[in-house]
Image (cartoon, rainbow, N blue to C red; front, side):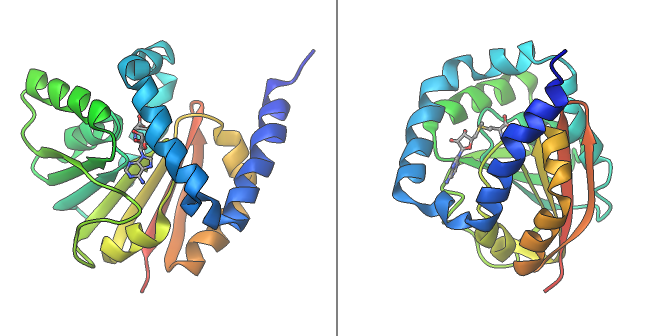
Length: 212
Ligand SMILES: C[S@@+](CC[C@H](N)C(=O)[O-])C[C@H]1O[C@@H](n2cnc3c(N)ncnc32)[C@H](O)[C@@H]1O
């Protein structure tokens, strides 16, 4: 019988390792262009895909959020898309101020529609480039980002000293866990200490803290 776990790890682990060793690929022209084209194409069907993925899809994010211990006031959700992490973060921290940025208007329009429908007022959905953020240094207590490229140097720049960074992937959690040593090293090189990493549901959360 095919072992799906082994196949996923076999496929994703080298890919994760490659990106960790060559973070420059996320700054390449080709990659940045793809990031402007594909999210736009899938924006209309994106939430349906999340719904079809079932409750397991949310587990890693929810589990990660339970470990946010610094009572964050200023939060940012990077690459928010249709607001998957922003809305869940708002449930955990209803009196915090949440900036949620994405560079695709079509994604943000859907997120704003959902905010209006639910009456949410503490998320500010804003157009922006996560690789070149329009915020001052050391502004945020907590950064969350899910299912998206990690623009680590910018994230670290806008994070306060001892602020928390939560990176979530709702898929291939096991493959990420096999890469824990490499992930810890990658984060450490940018001044982030890995506090906790756990594969849960289909996904994984990676919790780090800025140390410098
Ligand atoms: C797969 S979606 C994930 C959306 C959401 N965080 C989630 O978990 O459902 C990836 C998102 O990252 C956004 N993105 C990628 N690169 C970006 C950048 N440089 N600046 C802002 N948004 C970016 C895309 O526009 C897209 O909406």
